Amino acid sequence: MHHISIISSSIREGRKSHNVSLYFQNYLIENNLATTEVIDLKEYNFPIFEGTLKTLINPSKGVLNYAKKIKSSDGIIIVTPEYNGGYPASLKMQSTFV
Image 1 (cartoon, helix red, strand yellow):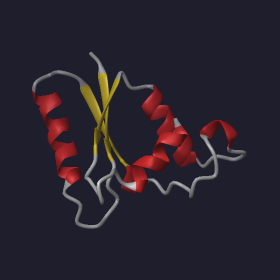
Image 2 (cartoon, helix red, strand yellow):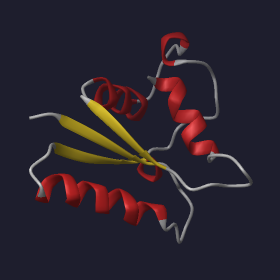
Image 3 (cartoon, helix red, strand yellow):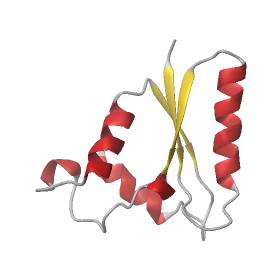
Image 4 (cartoon, one colour):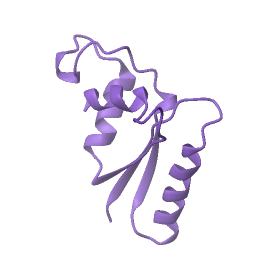
């Protein structure tokens, strides 16, 4: 069975999109389609952009843990709200750590 990571990208208080991440997780599990894990970017304290994972001198455990989870996934679902016509900064930052 495949493992799907679901990235919940909003880190704001009162966020609604996290419920969509949980919906996808429940759907995949209930229909026996894949094992899943919701990766909630709110739980990570990513640093201000200092460089890609390969160029960081001393990456945090959170950054390394996040990269490991993404690399070990067979697929990824990204759940993101729209902010001012684009996706949130939290999602832009995390893409540099894979």
